[in-house]
Image (cartoon, rainbow, N blue to C red; front, top):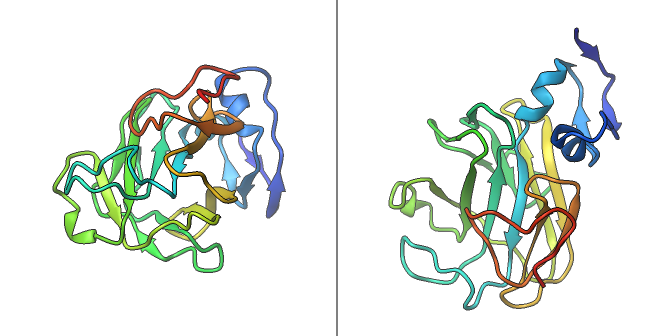
Length: 193
């Protein structure tokens, strides 16, 4: 069947499956949703806004801000034409390039370094036209028609300590003393601090 939800913020619990864990966070919906599609929503899974020595960008070897998107579903997810932004008031700040997708259970690293000319240098990684603020801000992922898929607001970050969801794509957010871009994050309920 289908669900018809009115515009707004919904806290949805579907039991204890991985789908339910991920969907317990705020989900913004204003369309008909097929329940199986909830697993296809990608999440902002990890972010580091004060990277001075933790994870080097393979395109240029520099230590730059990054975020990671995660696909918890058993099918690939196309994000072509979706938007990423560090400003909730400007959700269409950057359209993900044509051909952007995340494999089933996979991750996509986006370097928030303002160096879009590096897109295509390292397979499976993108470069956004904005940088993240170490003093805290938001990250927003939106559909091509600007409907929010996921958003995170974070406060001040310590150097080389990322924040992320655990388990991957889960509802809990914690600090990660060892950043894990494109690698598995900590186990359920455990921060690696």
